[in-house]
Image (cartoon, rainbow, N blue to C red):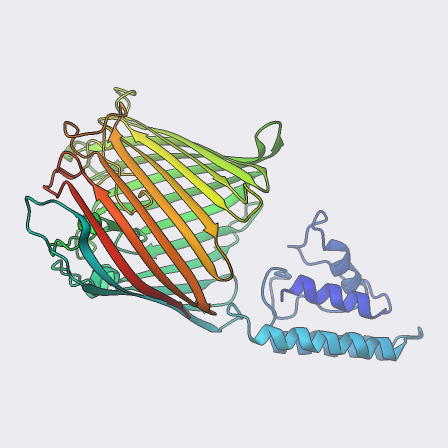
Length: 483
């Protein structure tokens, strides 16, 4: 419950004598709740108590102490009031307000409160069951694995919070890849807001994280998982605010990292976004531009490679059942056709009126898009957590279909080809992946899952240039518990 809600409840419940005071300086005349705050101020209630700078902080969560103070203020003004008050109505409203304050104690973002939440995945997989390359050794398994995600979040008050995340990633995958605890398994995010004299507060976000982390599996049980990535936060510092109706941000990001978190390539970016509102044919739209400059040494641009990168995206919500997004980007100032990237995605909700949702993603990158940095990439991972390499295209289709009570069938397909759309034995990196999964919501926060995945690489060379079987599959059973 925020202060605005608290103010509305009080204004509705009582009528107080008018004592003219000064409005808090951070409550603007165009604020939808301005009249309610003004009503309290004019009736003699000190709404800025605890804020020596004379501000109201309408978006800040209210503590029990602050609620008690305001209620005491109201009691004093009610005592001095000469107007008649229906005390039965006041008692009813106060009881309602008491219940609202009680619910406040359970809110995870209560001031100085700490929240703990996460998830635990456990799976047992068998590979090369029905589809396998007869010219290679056949690794069947089974192989057990787990992944634990755990978050500790603390509200520091005054629009600030701290979040610490633990992610074991492939720590329970029997992987041969070593993981340093502080460098890879942990990431930390801090958020704060401050008044810098602009029309809106400036939000500051600082992150310490490992960036994308590659999984390597030499067991041979599930080749479709070898070379996948875990999407983790990058080390970064971001300043954002709204200026003249535009969402603006300036950021500093570590792009390439060592296993221990040392930054090799650093990026400075400028982001500009604008909500366009309702447009003909496009629906509710939002446009965003991101300009980046990255270098191995900002103090000496001649010491190593550097690069410019520009992207423009348009997100469109046509109606409650259809939304789509288009992103265009290029890197570098020369060879624009070989250094371009395009991503298009649409989402259909309940398209057959039986609860079936469809998601489609298409992306393609020019042959030199990520140059000159091998790790300097801006491409999102595909639906199977694999990277799109330069000169390749990727198409994916995901269908979510509810069967009956608590059961969900999910079909995920992904095609990878070169930028001309060619696949086959003569096209290294081209592949096809198909997965069918059945999810069962057994009880609250517990989902049981079984899946079958088919993976085909006709050239026997994956997108990273490594040798893989021409065909393989995987059958898995597991559970996901959220807490």
